[in-house]
Image (cartoon, rainbow, N blue to C red; front, side, top):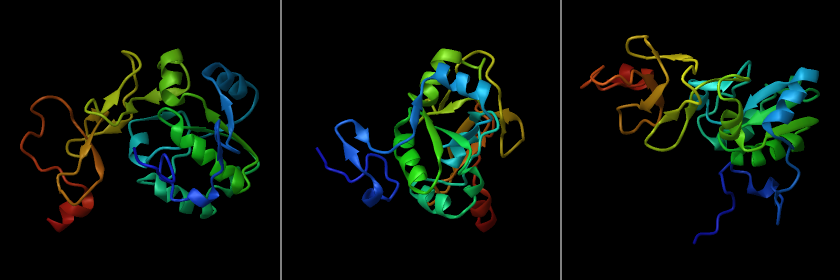
Length: 206
């Protein structure tokens, strides 16, 4: 067993307050039905609490997607002023299963966001309830060998293969071992076999 300052590393352990119930001062939790009730009566902004590349293949309709490649970049992103126009508006954060948003919403509230919600159970729970017949569009990136999952047989395909431009919801690592960027590529067996698919920066240097 290891003791860690943060369960997910936002790089701000000194800002967080935790009690026996979890993170103190986070956003108001909404289950999927409550989310629909809120969006029916108010003009809300969805705020993606995941890494930017995850949102390439799936996100809530009209969501704000911060340009972050890992959770440690969120603090600087929030402090940049890019989202100050949202501070007086209802903002609904969402993450894969909801854990990251426990911390993110607390950081947002500490920075003056007045009406912050978090989707309880995250995209996973929402997808189990509404599939692709609600406010979610596309595929859900997952951190295991599956790569992504769909909630129905009619999931939208939002991204395109970086090699051939064909619609795709599959992400894979850049072929350069020094690079951690995820790229959208075709998943069909045999397509681009043998190619070293590189991100733009590493392709230019190759």
